[in-house]
Length: 316
Length: 46
Image (cartoon, helix red, strand yellow):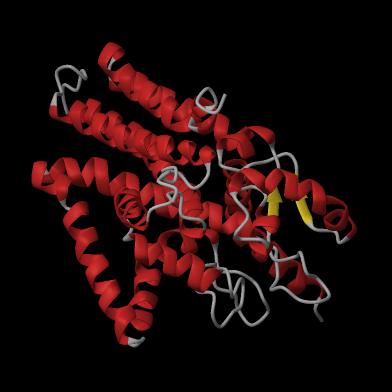
């Protein structure tokens, strides 16, 4: 009989997932410490405090969005530990710093988004589309989707769903609240400025932008267009520093493939993807594509007005 | 090799900690400048 214990991590490269999340927690803790020691941080009044809060909001917020939307995402698909207890509890202390109960994130992504990607009736995680297939405004999606729209759907699906699912959701939400409230017990103003604001940046701007560009201009899977459901973002610095999330077509079609194996999968699929005119962008990551989408969203109303004006001139 | 790659995989968290630490040496305006620089770089190139 073998007494050899299984390794802690399901895949040795998942050490990177652990390191990323721990660094995010350290970043939050460091920001809190600086706030609580304003003299050491040279915070001398409201203006320097505002500069610090904006800096922390942008920096910690962005990595918080990546930590939940990319890094925890890996764990949601393929748990990183070989032990269920560790997966459950590390997941809880992972998602809470992104402003999420881990069970809720997994439900939205694995149960709702993946099996129903871009289905107008079922996939409520992506931007809404009108009857002509046009998506809602990027800005509206960013502001509305988290937490408001998502929690409306959670309420419907958990409260009206099967009893075991409802009970699990309530238990996980209470565990989340207990963990999430810790910064408020230390200093409620600090929590609002350096916990809630970064989580808003992470969810609405970083993750909202990411969700937008992953499926912008795409359509539900069909036999005629089997790879048109997602966009690949293949800029090397992005794929290297974002857990290969840019291989999104490959990921959606093979969600159980480990994140380290996506580049090889891409090489295997590349010929087929190119032949099918799949959306492969070698020049941008999500931040760059989000910037382009923001510029397009700013221009959109003016373009609409110009088209209307042109129509009024040419119409009899 | 795996551990050596951690700063690359965790590029943004590492930059975040460095930018926050800048407040200790030079104050929060420098942190803000670094935050905007990182985001401008990531926005236009990443």
